[in-house]
Amino acid sequence: MIFGRAGRWLSGLCLAAVLLVTLVPASFAADPLRVVYPDYWPFFTRTVEGRMTGFFYEIVSEALGRMGIRSTWRAYPWSRCQALVRSGDADAMITVATAERLAYAATHEDPFYLKRLKVFTTVDNPRLAEIRNIRSIDDIDRLGLVVVTYHGNGWNDKFIRSRGIKTYESPLLKNVWLMLANRRGDIAIEWPMAAWPLIEEGGVANRIVETDVSLEAMPFHLLINRDCPYAERLPEFNEVIKQMKAEGQIEAIVGKYVTKQ
Image: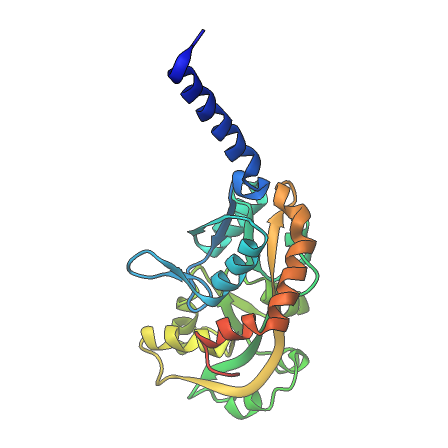
């Protein structure tokens, strides 16, 4: 037995430890949500100092923080991200909720962001006038245009490839613009704010033109592996996102990265 001052000190220490465990919210005591992402500015990337940044990262981490959920973020090629979430070696990713992805991941009702897509082509494309007059995906199909995109683009799979429209893929997003500039296809369909930095980085800005053609928006959601315990909290995540929209918080976060569309 332990007596005297030492015994009282040890008993107090044990009591403090018990109180600490019982007072910490369960979500903070649990494992963090393991989010995987493709390095893609301005959605999610790391600074040279290793700090996470990007407006998808800020929106989702803010919402999770309000729910008391910690998160970790690791970058991989996009196809690897999807494979990791499918296998359960990662918990979550941010993307379009296609039928294929929903077979192994759950999501919430309302998208937290709509990415409006524009049609790009080359300045010397002989069919430039026809491309500028595109009004829908039906026109792309009717004209027999070839689309270049990146591997794992769920929107393209759902709305372009599924229609039988010929598509060439690059394993890396940045190489899409090199493929387009070298006439491996007729058009690329992407979000201008993220496209132009990659076009300029690839040294092909003088060979690519952004048309005024705007197609369907890509709705972005948080997807969580169905076996992850946090999947059952997605309805709560949806309500937090709605609250953040009402507060103007999401608009403010996006505004730090992109100009008004």
